[in-house]
Image (cartoon, rainbow, N blue to C red; front, side, top):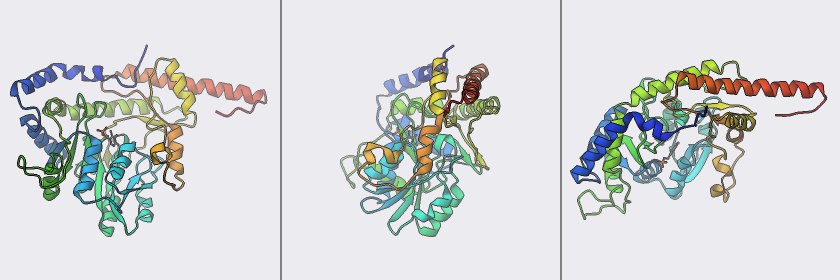
Amino acid sequence: MKIDFLNLKQANTRFENDIRDAIGRVIDSGRYVLGEETLSFEREFAEYCGVEHCIGVANGLDALHMILRAYGIGEGDEVIVPSNTFIATWLAVSQAGACVVPVEPDGLTCNIDPQKIEAAITPRTRAIMPVHLYGQPADMDPINAIARRHGLRVIEDAAQAHGARYHGRRTGGLGDAAGFSFYPGKNLGALGDGGAITTNDAALAATLRKLRNYGSEVKYHHDLRGVNSRLDDMQSAVLRVKLRHLDEENRQRAALAQAYTEALAPAPLHLPTVLKGTEPVWHLFVVQTPCRDGLQIFLSEQGIGTLVHYPIANHRQRAYADQTWPDLPIASRLQSQVLSLPFATYLSAHDVQTVAAAVLEYFRRTDGTRTANRAAGVDHHL
Ligand SMILES: *Cc1c(COP(=O)(O)O)cnc(C)c1O
């Protein structure tokens, strides 16, 4: 039996009729950009996140980049980011013209380690951009306390954490502003690109509404040298359908994560660590093992698809090769040890058992090989 890492068509099947109706409504409306569907989605998503304002934009990278721009963060400024994240977090800072200052994660949660942030602050630091990686909320209380002490902005990268809670409060409202992505594979995914900014800062929201629309609020009056980065009505209509089911889907994800955690307990793996006081939304289920490559090949031979998030640490990417970076041993280790198991709301309990059984079988076999080699005097490192 084959189990994909994630099959998007299958993931959207349960919404298919409602999505077709919603798209039909947009076609009939004749309004395709900044129309009723987008206004309604912005209202509904703001309410969902527990914030005052939501601004729909073209994608998650633009969301993060535009927040920085709206705060006037750019040339000559520094922004603290996790060393371990999807590269878009870094690119948003670079695109704004500011300098990326990576801070290592806690090796267990994989999220930025608040204890390492203060050492990275300089007179040029303007903001901290924590990421709620894999759907696990970053430890926001200490991060906000540090930011307050040093007069810094806190910008959440919430692209993987729609609906996650930190001490009862949803991501998107845990800092000064947050960037979301609605890329199809995210927990709240469109049928194309999409993104949003959430904030309680009314002045910031007003600037962003202009910035995303050629710097204009009133047609043909341009207050800023803005960009064109809008969430369109077709995607908004799809997202409105899926938003109504987001909590239910996140609960299914939590149940799958629980099932994986129980079934994989006997395996010599590092399983995901959940920070106290948080409710993750399990965008990914990421295990860590020094035998990652062997395990991935074995699972693939059994018809089980996995992915690596992410195989090359950002500071080792060619895009950032023109700078010298400090030693980032945790990010460097994670790139070779993390493995994301199949994870989708359509997976059955039986699918999870199948994957877990294959993982256990891999370790049973390699352990056997190790023992045999040891007996034969072969020095064998996995
Ligand atoms: C997906 C993602 C982004 C970028 O979102 P796009 O919509 O693809 O531009 C940013 N940060 C993280 C952590 C992501 O996972």
